[in-house]
Image (cartoon, rainbow, N blue to C red; front, side, top):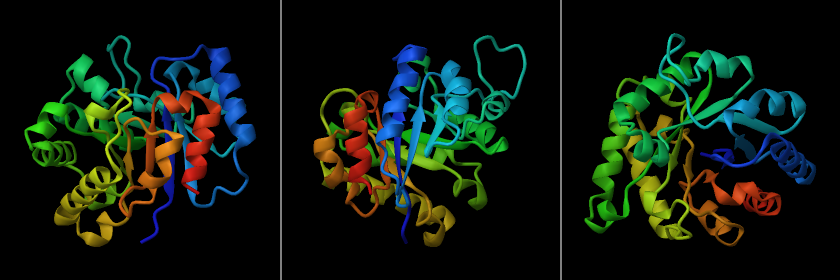
Length: 253
């Protein structure tokens, strides 16, 4: 089936508020008018969301968060809940990014709870999964990704899983300048879709969008996005440069 592509930018911990406003304005001004075949998402630092969602409310760009708490409210210093994100019109949130796994020791049980917290407020979870270089070199990459998918989505119904976006991000390709080949990426995306098909059926699996993330740049985006099971990209460094991000978006439409 035809799945509308998503080009999502993860800004991580970059940009001041004034820089963020200028960057979004530049991207917005350069966007092609006809985005019928692709959606543009940006995850800025969370404290900029109220400003950006208000200032660019008429834009094609959808804004979301880089993380979310599993808790709805309470004495959890520094956490940001789904209700808070919903109140500032965040449309999506990343969950399970490899940097959260590495630096904050998040596991897929916790990440699964975050997925449900997001869904409870109609916020789209973008679930990040992927293997390390050691795991790939040990030929365990399929086992690792299957474990991540099955654990994090263990309690998701067929209706819920259709509201989730999956992002395959091989850890060895994030911020390294090394990109999985189009064949490697397609192979894993097809494998992920097969896992979903086993649990939910092929017709549901075919509706779920699976993004590739890991050193996507203007010069490799077209080949990646042309693969049958790759439904766009989760873009890191290149999303911080308007010209590069626009070029990647144009590769998807």
